[in-house]
Amino acid sequence: MKLIPTPITAAIAGLFAGVVMPLIWPRLGDETLNWVFAFLLVVALPVHGLVVGFTPSREARAAGALDAALLKRVTIWLVAAVATVALMKILLA
Image (cartoon, rainbow, N blue to C red; front, side, top):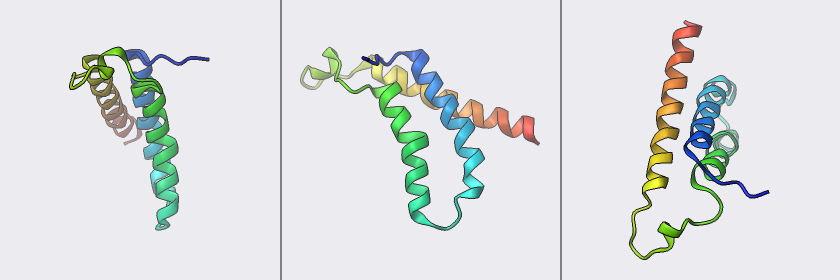
């Protein structure tokens, strides 16, 4: 299955990170390895698969080119994550 990152998948990754990370944050404790695994599974892996993708785009292959689509997906991911965390704080307060 070939996964093609889009703004929708970027928003889904942001929603996922914004919901899951605040829920598991208090349960991670002081163990550094728990924090590393949580960050990798909740943030890094979804971002890599749903925002960046596993194959470079044509624009990214061009020497020195700025990948505008990737920049847009990263922005959407960050906005979705921050908005989700803010909404959860409002709803759970």
